[in-house]
Image (cartoon, rainbow, N blue to C red; front, top):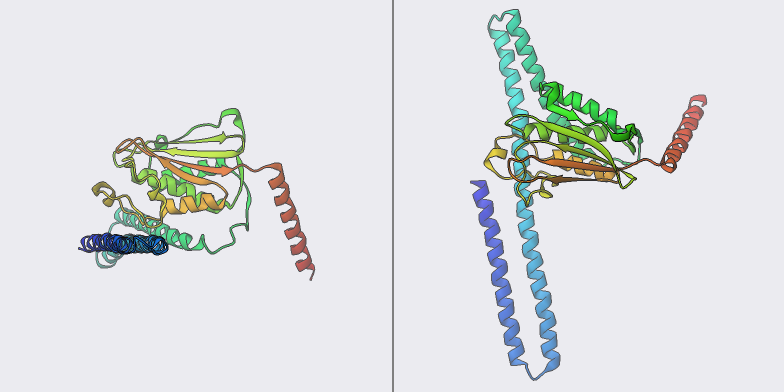
Length: 324
């Protein structure tokens, strides 16, 4: 009902814009015909016409964009409500069963395991929403350290395997050629959040079996590139950039059955850009998998020296405070 109403609103504004443009064209032509002997008035009419057309087009674009933004926010609220309500209802049901009925020890352990899984799901949703709010508020230059990407990626893979109860072979990590260490100057927890979000998405959108391949490499000598490729439902051709927008979820029946908040890949791209890099998506097409690529600037002796200087100053400051 709401989607139909919003589509009607968008159609209304587009139609209104077209009618206004048509009216403006008619008035301008009439102006020129009536004043064809006066060059100055004709030029003035053309200028006013151009300004009027630009204003009408901008007004229509902003109105349609606002309607679509409101639609994405409503979808986000519905998704978050579901992501919060479902585990809470499940935990409540298990607790009521334990309270009202005698349950043997084996079944109790099953209930505890299920409740812990629901609690993890609830916590993950809350943390994702909080992280989306925090990214735009903190000074992102603070608390940066040298992060080795290979052990960080291995740790994220282990967490994902455990979280989704996957077999060890479900996520493959290719070794780095040459045995080099890819270090970046970053906020480690933010990078962990970004990588985990990409891996979680790869698992969620692979309903017919999880087969994920991760690789790290050096690009153009100064960039660390992380590629995470799944064999899931893939992306339509016009969705490669939109999936990184806040609250956006790819339309379609298959995607609607997969729950989410529309914040995961938004966080990934925001974190990558705040670290001087970027996040992109590629896909051969529907049901042919997706590759998410994160690029981050490699640390250099200059950045490492700057970091050491900052840490040294912080250490001296703490020593002075301790003596005081």
